[in-house]
Image (cartoon, rainbow, N blue to C red; front, side, top):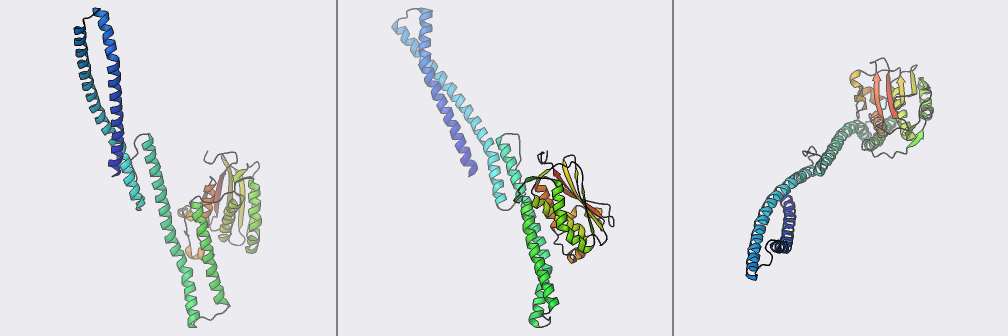
Amino acid sequence: MIRRSLSAKLFAGQVLVIVAGSVTLALVALSVAPRLFHGHVRDALGVVPPDVQRHLDVAFGDAVLLALVLAIGGAALTAAAVSLFLSRRIVRPIAGLAESAERVAQGHYGERVPVVGADELAQLGAAFNAMAASLESAEERRRRLLNDVAHELRTPLATLEGYLEGLADGIVSPGEQTWAVMQTESRRLGRLVDDLQKVSKAEERQLDLRLARVSPAALVDTALAAALPAYAEKGVVLERSVGGKTPDVRADPDRIGEVLANLLQNALRHTPPGGRVTLAADRSDHGVVLTVSDTGEGIASEHLERVFERFYRADPARARAQGGSGIGLTIARAIVEAHGGRLHAESDGPGHGSRFVVSLPAADRTPGA
């Protein structure tokens, strides 16, 4: 229906242009041609008898009318055929775009339209494909998130349900240990919900970033001050290293503080007592790198990229026992990328410690430049 309606409108508009042009052509020709003809006759023959003049006028008028009818008719038919062809060529990709949009609306986010050329229709097709790709990516994240959430909620909910049933049946006594376990699992659920909300906003680029010009040294010092008590309690040394002439960065200090706090907590979790963790800031070719290095467990090469996936744990049992929600690194990477930076992990393997490197553009550089 869309194809016929739009095609008919385009064709009708083009036919109207043809008719208007033909009428204008006829009116101009019939008003101008006789005067020109009379002038040429007078120049060539001088004074012409009235009967001869009438004969010449009739002959000229018939010739002009016949020529106009044939010319306008042929031109109109040719123009109509070309107009019909062009209207169909214009409508076909739009109709295909409408059909694809309908399929996307039905949930088929893998739908794409062919993009040919560089005109407005091609730009529209490219914009549609970009939109469909974004929807497909969002839908994939939503599905993975639901699966991950269902998996992660199962354990604490089962624990709470088991204790509640035990309390109801009198099998479990309402002692201090029982309440401690239930409180731990409840906190775990609350932490999981908070983290899920953060990672969702971060991945959808909906974080409220309050950007300001800030020095890397200030970011490092704030993060160290917050982390020192936990490090002292565990007996892990926390060191500071800030290179000279490090440029300022344009960042949200609170959000980058979240990133560094997460990386420092992660390093503390995987570094035994007596170990060492260093938070460093140095100049790079494009800005600043903030590095959290530890002498802890290390990471196998096959896990280096996967540690940033939601709920991925190289050692699931140990990570859960140590209280990690499984999405802290996912949140950290999303926050860094929202600043136009990059976060990646490095390690020489198990037993050789690990390094998490945050790269941020300098304040006087455009992200991605």
